Image 1: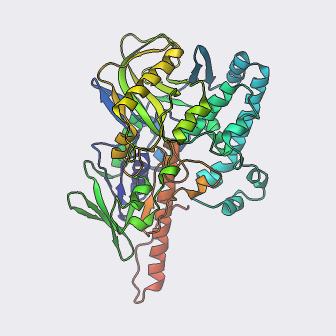
Image 2 (image 1 turned 180 degrees about the vertical axis):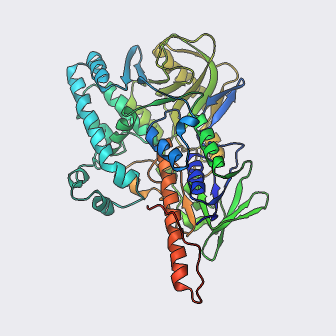
Image 3 (image 1 turned 30 degrees about the vertical axis):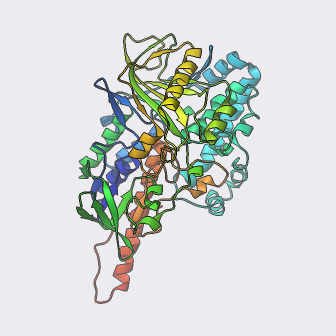
Length: 517
């Protein structure tokens, strides 16, 4: 396996982790990326000379990244300064406000003060259920290769059978939340976790309540912004010999003798390889973005199955009147109407708004002058079908500011703010329509329909937030671990077959290290 040549397409989290792990296992790895630097959706946007996070902003499941850096002979702490967040997020409904904390006891007290003791008791039961679901699925589903319902039950085994029978897959998250919370504001708050994978709480299974446990297990504040994680992963790969080629879009994945054999860049250059890991959305392969020969490797995703897109403002702004924490959510008055509009392919008339105040920690004290903000409003992923008009964009901007204003937040974005629409995300990530999380997790079978690590073409693998096990930065990293495990296992099997089946004593160098998966 040593010196096995692998090309990784894309320098998002899935591609960066794949490259670093493969290099640590002795592979000769080249990463080719169309953009000017690493990160993919974990990107920074320059506003007034300041780097503002324009992608994911919440860092959870730190242990996954500790494992990755250790596997590559390094330590996460050598690259990033991380501080645990005391306040996970600040939530507002007009003038009403509720913080969620890292401390469960503090949450119970806060919820009790906000909505009464019965709701605090409901939170206690909800928290236990979210943990149960996460613990049940962590090893057999999140950390293992794509499977089907029957095989998942076998993986969970006899001891996990009671959990297997109660994965809450056939009830919607919104309906399940009603069993814990009578206060509609709390259903709205915890239903929002569905949007972490670009889905509607009214259509996704209650299984996704496990996301609440992920966040409750710890949120970390990354000094300098989340995009620093991409730089750290790039440095990790370089330390093990990974070569990075930026401004190098791929025109075609080469298929020879029925398997992946490298890539051809847009400039015509061919880079040969024994295997290819694709960190683009798998739907792009199925849509022919990487050539006709590779098209059969994956399936397309119909517009109706896409996850949410977003309107994302990145700004060096002046914020007044509301004590922002790092993560803040300003809720709409009518959650069902908001998601009904999105399902119909429209922007909500009165949207919920997320504000990441990148320069703030847990303190409520205001900052003097301007600060780096990322503001998100959910949007339909129709950037390739029905681009938003200037009038629609203007209306959405006014609605966003109005939602924030109801809670007392006054935002002056200035003239240099950058707005990224679903059409812009479609240009950055083709064949998605601007969907930021791959396919939506709607219906009990959605999680089993995601693209797995292996594709229909031998030697071609997928990694990233649009593949199994799901969306989000930690899941993208797990997908890379799974893709690397499959690649190394497949190559070890091929090598062994060659040694035993070929006549004349011809053999290959033995594989010293192989991951399972």
